[in-house]
Amino acid sequence: MQKVCIKQDDLERFVTICESRRRLEISFALPVLSSRALFPEPGEPFRYSMGMDLSWLGNLTKPFSSLLKPPAERIGKWLGRRKPRLFIHPNLGQSLWCITGQAGTNDPTTELMQIVFWAEITHDDDKQTLVIMDAYPDGTHSQLNSMTQFRIPPSTLVHEQISAFVLPIKGERGRPYKSRFVLIDQFHRKYKTQELVFRWVGAPPPATTSSGGDLPTG
Image 1 (cartoon, helix red, strand yellow):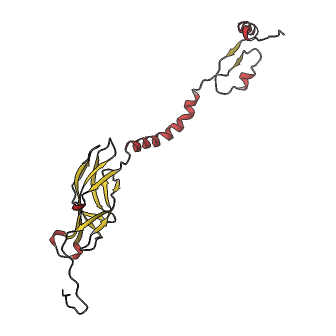
Image 2 (image 1 turned 135 degrees about the horizontal axis):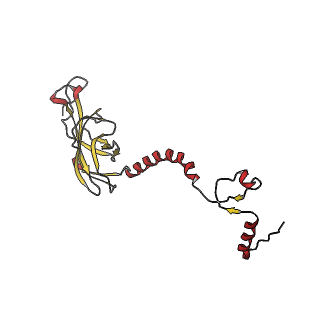
């Protein structure tokens, strides 16, 4: 048997000697070699495969791709429609409330809390236009559609009137009412203001009688 001595500076001579005795194929291919490739039958050429063909990775990752694509799309939409911060600057002298009745009736069961204020409003999103659809004091629910929907374009300060007819009646007749206001946008997202103080502008509360049944005198 001929002894082959491989030297780094004599690669061409090494290849010539190997090809004269047995065909040597170096193809660099994955996946893992089979036992037949490592130990060929007598008379078969020796094929040594050690390559970097990564096409098999495509089939391996297809199931993961189909699973991850829907969440990735939802995350992309969520990032593209981030809830902006709303900045509300109320005009304190124009924050008012009272108790009113429906359709002019005097039935106390039809009374509603009416509340209104004016404010300058903006937000910090430079792409979205917000549309405020509804508003009401925290802890109440709108009963009548009294507010005109308004738009807040990006980088814009708008001056708007916000009003609501709500239940339950949270305030006490004749006294200022403190509450945070909740604003709802076109995506049903909620924004809360700081605590606001609303001045009573309704009729004075009815005078109470004394224990003897007579009205108090001055």
